[in-house]
Image (cartoon, rainbow, N blue to C red; front, side):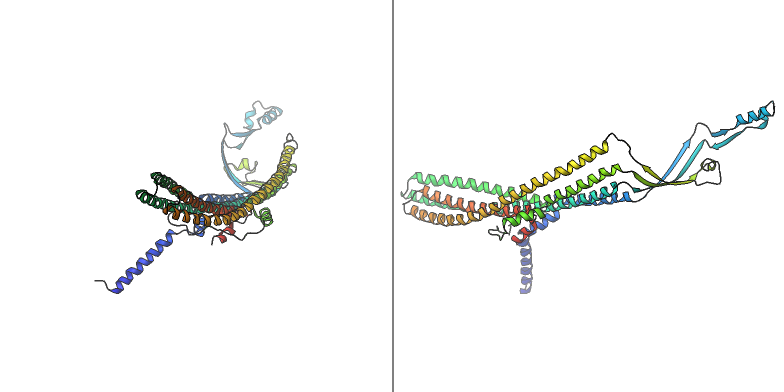
Length: 460
């Protein structure tokens, strides 16, 4: 038999399990953000691009250093490499009046073997390239900064996406409850109408109107259920989760302390990653111009080479067997004298690219400022609409109460009650939708101002 202590243990364990279960079922916006930041594949992809660019930059930095290469080669000739002095021997035999020049021997000297093999090292070190290497290194660093801005832009956009989808689920959940109450109210009205019809107080047509109203309310209720499933699927996709279950604990933000319109416009110019990327593109274009100008300068490099191993000391020692490891060092200069005006046209193309970015920057700044202005006024309009709709909700609630009572006394029709119930539900849904538009507009305003992280403080 269990004693009291055993029951307390069981109760405590049950309480812990229930608490953990309840906590697991609730998802705040901050929790959703943390999951998205850890699991979202889009964010993982841009972070991997940053890692890739770091290695690219390191590889380009290698252009500043010497290049050392090992080489090896095996060669087979169709005959031995010899030097023949037999013509001089024959002339000497004639001079000595010898009848047969062969008595002086064969005057051939072997220079190389028929089969030759050798291996060694060679090195080059650019000491002047007109600025091409510096431009390439700087361009690579700028490209890394552009990717960093892309990461920031992706993070900001995902916060807006999360706000849209998180509160879309919230909207669907709240709308579901409104439709559920409408169904319950219409069923109650149908029940009352049926009783009144049975008692001969209202005509059958009045009961039929109530019956149709129940059917319509059920149809909208089922549609609201489907909206919840769709919204939760979209949110699960953002969080890279299998499904989203349970309640979303963060309520709609109904009133936020926001700054002036001018503040957000200036913040966009200074902080919006996409505009910052355009500035970096201008710097990248400048490096491109420097690289093209460098083509007008010569390339100068140190070079050196040595043969470490070979099988023919005579050949590689240049007829001196004592030099078994020949080497050479020097300085080389290359300069393009004429390339069909290639350098000139490439430079003009780079300068044209730089000029086009100025126009893109001006257009982008204007577009962002206009978008911020629209979002700012959308937020203000939503705040005003919520206040007005709250007044309408109070009126619609009172009107429903009055008409329901009047219908029970035979002083109002079934249509009057249904219209009042429908009007109240419409007002409630309008309030929910306006609250949704308000918070999504706020998230987008902060994104285009480069302040997306501040959205988290509004949801805590």
